[in-house]
Length: 287
Image 1: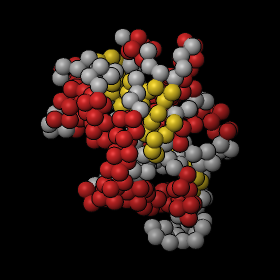
Image 2 (image 1 turned 90 degrees about the vertical axis):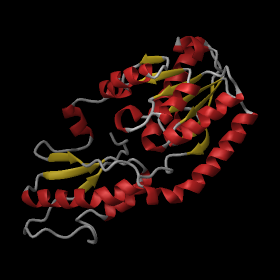
Image 3 (image 1 turned 135 degrees about the vertical axis):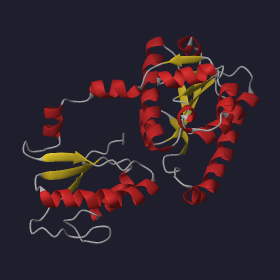
């Protein structure tokens, strides 16, 4: 059913936000491009997303990877940029109505765009891929009701997600989690350690503070403090930090204990100098 409807699409609008959405969107853009090429379909993808989606072949209306926050007060600086981007996107969609749309997570803006597109066309195919996890954390279903109202089909990545939206009256296809495909393509442990030049006797630990600026600000200090204590006790330990965004690299490198010291770092009391925290040379998305 999904395959049949997407086959007819020539211009597809994909909307997502933040680093994780950009990653999943890029995988979808690449997969749709391969399928379109096999079928001889001329497919144009216009999108809200980030650099990964652009590299995969999407034409960006706006970059949303940096518009993400946690907390009420912390969200305030992003309100105006989000509203301006929504206004610009609506103008684009009105002038260039797509043949279909795929929403990826990014709940509040995507509900706005989904309702807007449904107002513009009652027959426009709209799919929600990786629907908001309101089925996990919400005390109400107001957003779910809106999603079911404008989406033709939910492409669920969790069985519980599929059951939840089916129970709310949505047409649902359980497609599985995209991480499964990604894991199959990754090297095994010895190959990965060799590629990263990790010696056999080194203990490599990944620190994953996530991708939002607030998460970097508030989660990294306690993570680094704990990491430094472990380094002081065992000199074999090195840390690797996958970069969600390249712009975070200078701040991460500046906080390494082998560079100029400053908050939140302090030298450990052990006389043994700890090995450096090693930012990964190849930026990778957080899990």
